[in-house]
Image (cartoon, rainbow, N blue to C red):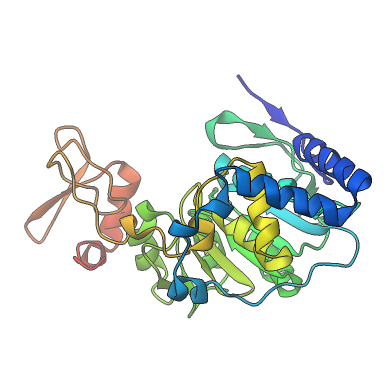
Length: 332
């Protein structure tokens, strides 16, 4: 079944309903009392504030003490979600949920104003077949302060140019999953630290040797540029951005509202499971490009220096054969 999602540039209904409910508390008891009530609620529930034993240590905390961002005194922070064919739903829907759920007691405006941007106004088909009608095109999109780039199809020259120009005045341009490939193609990540989906580490290292790939990072924050690992990692990076704008308490409240108990947003080095190359649990060969387990009886294969390599797809085989010496290297 095809689902057409027509997002509004202002806010999603679920986020609006949450904010309305919380603003009623502020109107009745005052902003200070509402904040105290929320603190008490968090203390009495198994939310993020009770995870002291799993909170990051001093070293990890120092690693994420990135320079705070200054939110506007009034109005909402504009967030552009750049999408195209094949956009991975959780990559942009996860951060969208985070930003829409931010609630600031005593404040009338939503913290963030969310909208989608694409090269044209034509519907795009995201992962799983969901169809989305973009709010804006590259030509008429409002200037964003936060840009979210999910995994998606290969970007056009016009898309890359828009990212370069829009990023100049944005506070944060963030990629999620293999959206890092899109961001890296702009040249903005050159010489900087970055991460991406663990299944794309090898390909990213081969394609962008001038970017310092950090395996095992949940996200990498380089000030006005940030990259998240795969899929759900975008939720953590978005919570981290919320913290940069509005502080730890606001980010914790947002995570609590979402019933999100992950701690990765407080520890960017929490993806260490993916820092080492995967070993097949069944003893089967792994694709040298993406690391997936392969059935050698049916998989495409290629021979390089007397060794046979198996691939999960013909595309990965072609990628390998374009630079076999790089993919075959054990440190890749």
